[in-house]
Length: 368
Image (tube, rainbow, N blue to C red; front, side, top):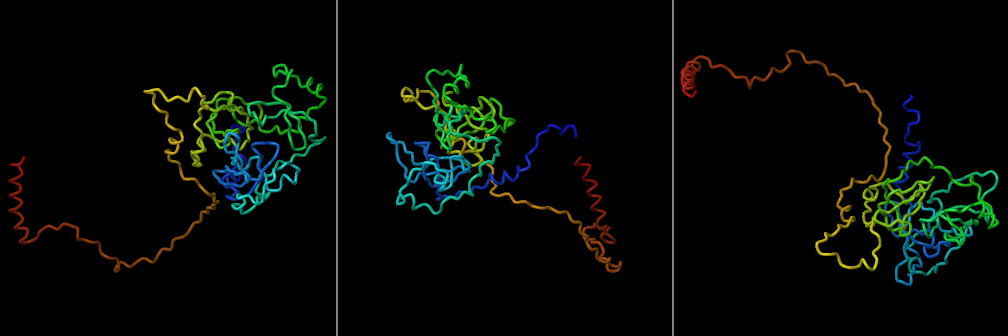
């Protein structure tokens, strides 16, 4: 019993969570509301184009293009991502949404709207002594630059960034008390925040697979650089530190090593190489061996077949009696077979066999 004190084991709902993770309630052609990539302060209607291993490729119903010509009509996210909402969520909570023309060609592919029951329910927290109020200050991850943590102004639903490079403020000498006094604001109480997950088990230099939150269609090999409470600072292998990103320990965008290969999503893994600069566009020097594409190598790995469904089976041990039939009388017992028993020659056959034995006896010494 003493050996079990302080030992770790599986959570009570492990098998239930495992079964839930293998099922995806979203289907191709379903319509949802998702954050607008071009303007994160509003949402847009989108349609589920592809479902791959719990990750959704969403196509904006009014897809546009940037001035440089880079398409912005699609968006990748996990099915439990907090930026994904059912149709009608924006109007219900008062969030800004970009209106879409109902006659848009994309609507022809839509066969149903998503409903709230398909989405992960938000955690219910009971607070004593108030909740978030307009004007409260807090710290949060900058959604535009995911490697920075900056002071934010929290409204009812929207969050406004005070700025990462404010004039007169240095993060090395920053003082919350002085900042709140200058801005005439008050800090959000610490008890309003989720502090669970301090014993998550992540440590520095651990390897994992993570989604590039700035380019959600890329999944890269990453290394944990820092662990601060619930936050992990991820460094993408092969990239410069400027591309590091902060994520929550319970983020649906981080996966264990080998998850992409098991889910047969090798085509989504990036090459983990930094973007080429203009000076790096020249042809490789002669004699330099070409680097093989990790995507091709991963696709050659044979993966085990994926289980589609977990079925509970109950096994019960039952003792059964085998009936013994009546024994046969001795008269009915069949005699043993004597067909394979060698018999000695008798009478004249024995006399004919003796000269043959003598000849064999005379030949054997000569052969020796």
